[in-house]
Image: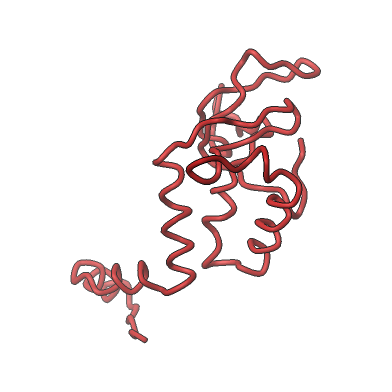
Length: 144
């Protein structure tokens, strides 16, 4: 399906749609990949969303940074456009998206900023409602 240790990112994304067929494999358009699909089975048609892996940057930079570098090296011309990364690609179908989907791009941008400066985390953690609920769970936020 095209996955390897440096090519991953299963999440809701655009896809090649049913007009692509490869060895009787069905593909989907926009779908929640990695979730329950038709007949409530795990759905994965091989579509990879760069923002799916890139959004994990603050949590696992040791595997995300090499993934970003590898995808940029192998597929830069197919993955990057006027506004940044295209939504997704599917190596099995030989398909690269040509759309930028804002709801998909936002998590990636927020997590890159969070990795760089901690801004998102620090901003959210100052919220009194978040603090109250964390206290109920027995957690204490120690600001930096």
